[in-house]
Amino acid sequence: MTDKTMTRRNFVGAAAVAVPVAAVLAGRTAVAQDKPKLDVNDPVAKALMYVEDAAKVDVAKVPTFKAGSNCANCAQVPAGSTGAWIPCNAFPGKVVSAKGWCSAWVAKPA
Image (cartoon, rainbow, N blue to C red; front, top):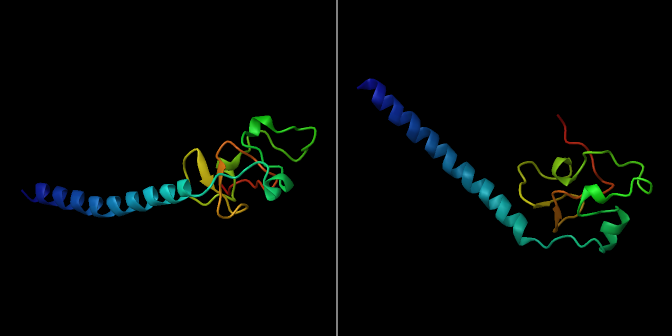
């Protein structure tokens, strides 16, 4: 009987933590989706050589590009950001393509 009571308590305790965490993460994604997508013709985007698909980076023009780098694995993107379009500190108030890349790219710390 004690084991069942503890199991229920553990479940209720875990649910009490999991539900608010899920709500916060869902809210972060919703906030990102409410922001406008960065236009590749935006002056700042052009200055930072932003592209919506890192596979299309012209390596001849951008020798600093590292294969495998993209917005999804950049330190400029706030932790926990998910989805096809994500917020980026280099472009405040806008979202960037997770597959994109720009010259502000910095590897996320390990």
